[in-house]
Image 1 (cartoon, rainbow over the protein chains, first blue to last red):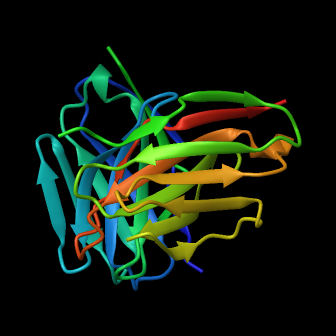
Image 2 (image 1 turned 120 degrees about the vertical axis):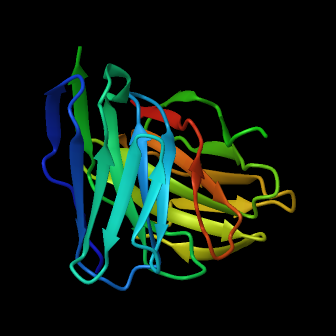
Length: 113
Length: 113
């Protein structure tokens, strides 16, 4: 059974820091991995998707890497801003052709001005 | 292009009642998935529909059911509501193809009294 873990559960940092968010999964036979952000009481916003054949993806100040063999992904946020404050979730898809995602519990990020 | 929409946004029901939630996917998307989000369990997969057929199902009791229409809109129904069904119900859509990037709606907040 696939399990996804995000540690720590919460992080508070001053504005301007470069951040690394971690995600680990138990079964390396994933199809893709997706990072989301969720603002309080809202839905999920897709940030980056990495297919199993890829090593990393970049979008603006965000960079996500994937190491399937070790069961890990990291989301790098450069020059953090207060607007980055949210809960960040990673999720893996383990069945090609199926949309089922297995989520971690998320990491609540607070960026202080 | 309009995003995923969900109606209603908020619902209050009492135990024993039933409820129907609606999801309209992004235009052109053929896959719709449903998730339940609670503080204790996080995000859990309910089921996925593709071209009006249920393609995958999570570990929820039979009180939870869904369907998809020919225009890809989807509904989920919960019968005989229990207090533990209080949650944010999220719908996600995707093309259903190889990329499988999923886009989420704002969710329906269900409170069972």
